[in-house]
Image (cartoon, rainbow, N blue to C red; front, side, top):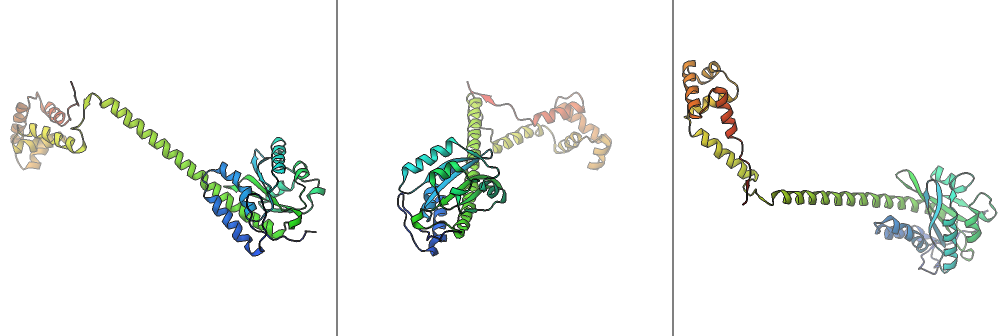
Length: 309
């Protein structure tokens, strides 16, 4: 038999303030909004109990799931710091494996919040924690990150304020879903920041290496625009030695054309082409047509950087 449902409301750090049930969803949404401002999941885990108490729950426990172990992480019992500290000490010293018959084991398996109505008489519960908190009724919900269970949230209410019920269970389940989304976002942001930092470091290393290599080198003339200009200048130096027709013949020679193919292309006789080839070799001081082509191609290579003295 579930005890009468209590009215959820907001709390400050130490005192419970009861408000109307209609404000429950709004209070939980506001709590998630405050948690969404935190980009660090460790800080988030510390703040969850306080924010849930502000949303109207009386006492809240937040636990991590580590290698299928239930490990208490943070808690908030308004107005009872000693009880809070005791619960944290015992929960951290005695973690429980999430297996049957724990109700939390079935909760994680089913991905659904639970309502435990008589924990002090139920041998299946975590008796170490129940013996300290002594809840009459409690609700709990699993927190998932990308389909992986990572945390548990437990909540109850002081007996004088009324006990938690099915609506509180469902509200806590929705809250846990929102909490998981915030934690997923924080992980993504953290990874993006790490990648960004790594990229910046990589760029700095490149600049550092570039600076080291160019300390004694004058590379100011080797921008893409100046390189193109230099190449054109060197080619022009060779081309200026040749007539327009010789340049045409040499261009076709570099593409592998034979004298006959060049003659057909330029609409001249093969003898005329041979004459042009002979003049090209003389002007470029080449021993044969292959040497002439090689010298022309070599002339297009940009000279090496000039070193400062």
